[in-house]
Image 1 (cartoon, one colour):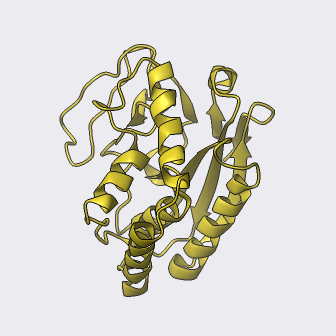
Image 2 (cartoon, helix red, strand yellow):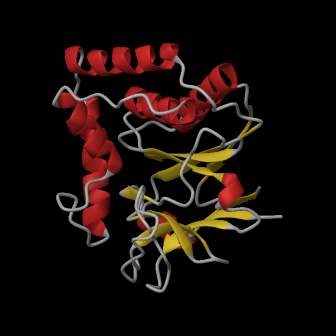
Amino acid sequence: MATYSVDPEIFKLFPAFRRGVVVATQINNTAADPALANLIAQAADKMLVESTDAEPERISVWNNAYLKLGVDPKKFTPSIKFLYEQIRKGKPPRSISKIVDIMNLVSLRRMAPCGGDDLHTILPGDIHLGFAKGDESFAPLFKATAFENPTAGEVIYYTPQTKKVMCRRWTWRNADFSKIAPETTSVAINIDIMAPPFESGDVDAALAEMAELLERFCGAKTVCHTLSSSTPSFQL
């Protein structure tokens, strides 16, 4: 049985960090849904009209996390910062597939980074958020043969058995090999939250929303987990 885990050292460096994970199976991702595209447009419009101090606070916490890890967030933009800046420029995310649209919708509503990977490309290997040694392999999304190695010490999301990296610099860039496709039927979706500026109950609320959307639009079966210093792993 595969293990999903977060390196305890990450929780020592960032005690306020929580990673919510939705494991979804029996997914139908074969066609886009106009209703989801409409919900994303509504969320983007609401952000422009009803912008509050919460959005910059939820972005700055990731800028600060990157700086603490020695990463320049201006050069390596945290995913939630990039999404927010695109919205402010009038460029909401385009509809891609039901799963990706759901992740973007929850990211917009919660102002929290979300990422997902096709479990069939990873299992039976373990899944780990930890620190790179530098000998791991990464090929960016839509550049399947452009292999590179992460920098030693950077936070990566990867499978230890194969040393294949799903995401570099915590939330910065996703890999091609585990991307979500129309034929994807099972996924692990991450929702990363720091409290503050989030509150303690925000992880559960975000997980519940993600699970409900996956069940409603994709017919998925879902199981939710929250990883913290007291519970840094679970069995897939």
